[in-house]
Image (tube, rainbow over all chains, first blue to last red; front, side, top):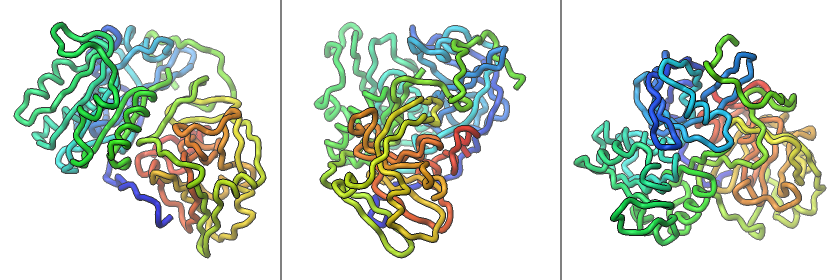
Length: 256
Length: 196
């Protein structure tokens, strides 16, 4: 329809998705509830920052279970990094978090998704990243890619997390915040803040959000990732603040 | 398939024949969308079918006066969840096309917010698709596509465009928003047509 507001198509070539067998080279406890998996994937075509993949587990009788996970790494390398949060009633995530160890083989399909992606050296608009819990994974990939490329696009990350121990990529994020073109990192603790933190634990309110993001007047690209409730709330408020809905990209996790 | 994941036994062996390959049964209703949820008042809502020769539009009241179907169906999301026996109310695409002549075979569904998805017309006619405005006896919630969404349950659920505002007839099959971003042009869950 001619009056339809168009969304810029991303027709840029992305690596073709396919099934691959990867070898887990490291399984490291990321938080008390999450494990970082480093997987060397033979034939992996590389992936853009923000993409995801499917992991398929197969039981001896042929039963399979498949779930999608965001990728914390990007670039041409054949090594992909995941950080998997254990869901209370999950079938796949508890296995990946508690059972998988270095040397195991995993079937993965990807890279997937071409919209929740940001590439260095492209769009000059400032970038606001907003993460709830494990939703930080693809945003970390994006912020990491910017730093690795030496890209100086203004970047902010607003990260809502339960406690200091639940912060994913804590050291890496701190390093990104200390570069010459730093990532501005705003952490919001919802259950327990570090000793000496200026504010008590709190959730992101409308006021806090408005004060913590790149203003709409600067026309930022915004990436929001978290639970559906988190994403819906944040995205609604951003639109109320005057952010262009077409500049807000969302990704939700959920399911088991 | 010869691959076996060391140590994995899986939890459920109740394989329901209504579940396509690679799908997991859920009882909640997960949300997949690429941006904010648009806020659309039914007073402003309009649905348009545009063809090579013109267009036909309905406002909300006119739409509600059309013949309404009750639909019970399984739905399958590309992100690996399925829901069985969901109930909807909506207007069949067959009913809408009683008033429309076209020689074109392909459809681009357009949504408020700018999203698009492509579907061949044959996949929408013949009792296969609806414009639905009720889920489980309640008005369709905005995050699930309200006030009205396309319902094409035999294809992956991204084809069931949320916040639908119209159908545009096309002479050839062109990729919509989701398809340009990596999803399959057709999207049959029984063939696992997830990605291209």
